[in-house]
Amino acid sequence: MKKLLAVSGVALLLAGCGSSYDWDEVTTSSGSKGQPTATYVDKKTKEPISGTITWKEGDTLISEFKVKSGKVQGDWVTHNADGSVAIEAQLDEGELTGTTVVYCPGPDKKPQQKIVIDGKEKSQSQYDCATGLQTALEVEIHTPAKENHGHDLARSAWRIVDGKQVPAALASYAKDGSGKLDGVQETYYPTGQVEQRHLYKNGQLDGVSEEYVLLTDGTYRLRQTSLYKDGKRDGDTTRYFAFGNWPEKIVERRESYKDGEDLGQSISFENLDVHVNARMNDIPPANYKIHSALIGRDSYGGFKADVESLKYLLTESKVDVNERLVADEDFPIQQVAENAYDMLVGLGADPLKVSLAGNTRLMMCIKQSYRNCSDEHFSQLMALANAKTANLYGNTPLHQVCKTTRFLKERPAVVQALIGSQDVNAVNYAGQTALHYCIVQKDKTTANALIQAGADLDKADLAGVTPMQLVFLRDPRPNSQKQLSWDEERVRFVGQWLSKSKFSFETPFAGFDKSLKQLMIEAGDAPSAMLVDSLSPKS
Image 1: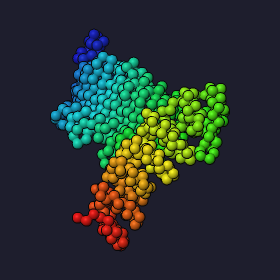
Image 2: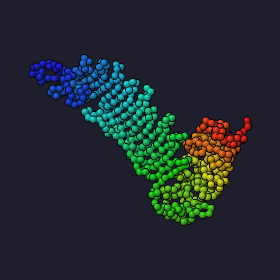
Image 3: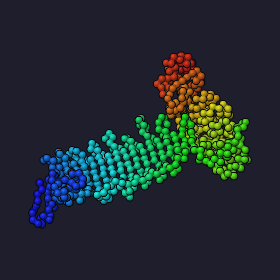
Image 4: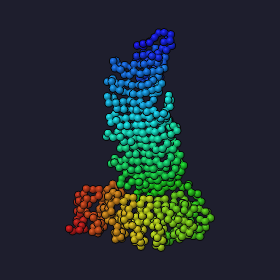
């Protein structure tokens, strides 16, 4: 009950200054009863009180604290029913100051929450009661008696995994207290590895944004990067292969942006090749005529251009001969008819310029075998500094030769010259050499030439498949489901090279737990198994 210290006139003027109040005699005009920041009032008069409030639950003393004009002043300590400390705080006229600690249940006084006010900064930390490790941190500008929403300075969060602290989230804010993101923002996988990382400036994305993928087998790698400026995409957004046997940071798709606008130009990798998309309206339509003149007319022996007319058009139209003439095509140096090539270079075209897919002029002559680039022109191109340049998929000119069946049959002299000038064991992004491609085509002549030049018959691609094994796969692509198929022609084809390879019909096949011979027997194909016996070296 309330105890008045005096009844004199002076004491009446000071009524309440030294008063004591039981818990059932008070209530609050703001905030929740039992909270240190509430405003405490007399339950009957509803007037703010000054004095000491004793808070008991039955015979248990929960807290005893002082208030002035309804506001808690000085130390605030509350206890649990077992007498252990629940909360410790300091207040000045109802505002938290210094350090406030909320403890985990139990006698050990392990912090569950800690609030530290230091001048204009207020930090709030959360802890895991089981381990005592920190799980969250928020730093903000401290504005007494006001909401702090939008005044963040930094935020961090952690997970507790197997008794260890691993990152969960991170955010940085502007130092001016505007609450705008500024700096690094990160989220994390439960393992503590970064899931997303973004850069902000003045509340807007600005710089490189990164996304990572964590696969079920524990593989962790970069999935996508995007460039931003002033909150808009500006530059390339690149997506990388994350699944299958691809090595890290192999481009799956790339798109281009400018000031937030999709430029409509993308590069993607499909079926062991590069596919390029570009919007048709990016280039003035008038350039289609120049483009047609550049390619020339189809004639016996290849395409021919009217060199003098083409030179006049290129000069008078003042087009940039190192830029695309139409959006869905490559640069002039890849497209020009052979008889106008030297003229185009004379006008300033860069002979080393590569296409959007990364192909050189040499590779385009191979890919577009219908153009019938002459042997002399091939010699000219093979002498350039970019003659061994690989495209965006990692394919060299020699890879492209082995992918182009018509070229293999019709240009044996050029094929032989390329084999002599290229690295026969260069691998593309799938880990495959030119021999992988040629052996799939079952081109014995070129395959033999590659092997004689030092091509490795036992070079495994990213799926662990060698050229010898590739002969028996229905789908040769690295990430395809492995299914085997054989016949007499293929068995004999491989049999002729057994002496130059570690391959054996008797050892387990890549991706299978049985040898090819055993699979033949289980399939009831006795003739094939018997042929294998006749071809296998005798011990």
